Image (cartoon, rainbow, N blue to C red):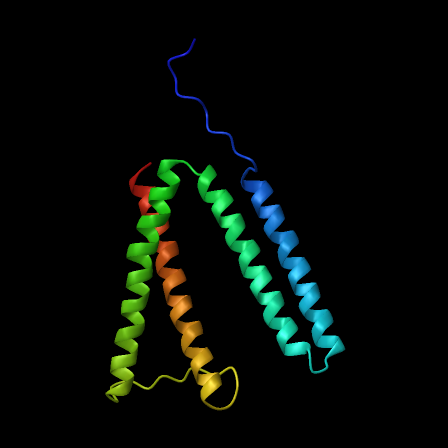
Length: 146
């Protein structure tokens, strides 16, 4: 008998999750392209269903991956999302304040004309800043803990 705790069994390894993510992304993208090519009045509701299915499957894969991750990996991701994501939001808030006060002028090209395009541009900048902050914080965590 061993005094070691039982090894946690991973249903899928990292590459398995990555491969499934790629396959799901290709299937969702193909279905979306097919719906767009066919068009018609049912196109938008079908695209919403495809999006909901894709997000649900992606979240399911995230849960499977998270359950198989060890404590160090989990801690690195939690720390990076908290500090890196917060720093990214802070940067966007500073840019927003400076721009609204007329101190700087942001020339972010909109995705589309009108308010929807401006909203989408703001979302893209915010997510980009959060992701960049996350990646920097994640790398810093691993460099400090190795």
